Image 1 (tube, rainbow, N blue to C red):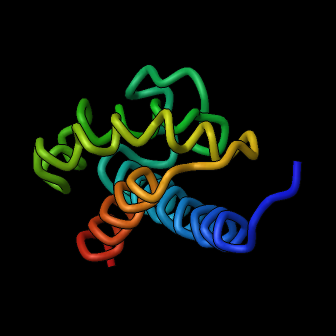
Image 2 (cartoon, helix red, strand yellow):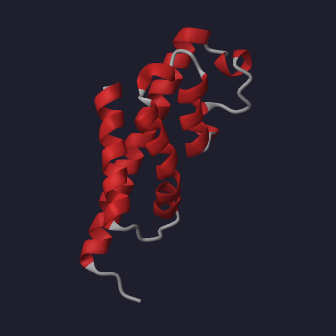
Image 3 (cartoon, helix red, strand yellow):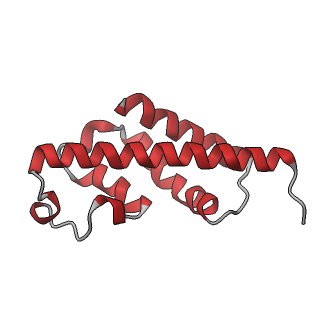
Length: 117
C-alpha cells in the first residue's frame, strides 16, 4: 500500500513534535528532580529506573507524583498527556495517525514548550 504525501508529511512532523516534547519533559524532570532530591534522586524517590529508561507514561507520572513537578502543568493538560499515550505509540510504531490525533500532539507539544522553556 502506497502512502500519500500528506500522510508522510504528517508523520514526519508528528515524530519531530513527539521527540521535542518527550526530550523537554525528560530534561526538565531530570534537572528538577536532581536539584530537589540530589543526584541520587532515583534512590530517594524509590524510582526503579533512571529517566532515560522510563516509558512515556512513567514520565508523565513523574509530573503527577513528585512535589517539584506537580505544578508544572494543569490537570487538564496532564489528562491530555495521558490521552496522547496511544497516539505516541502509533508514531513510535510507524502507524499513521489522523489529523485529530496530530492536532492533539501539537497542542500537547506546544504546552510543554511554553511551560518548560
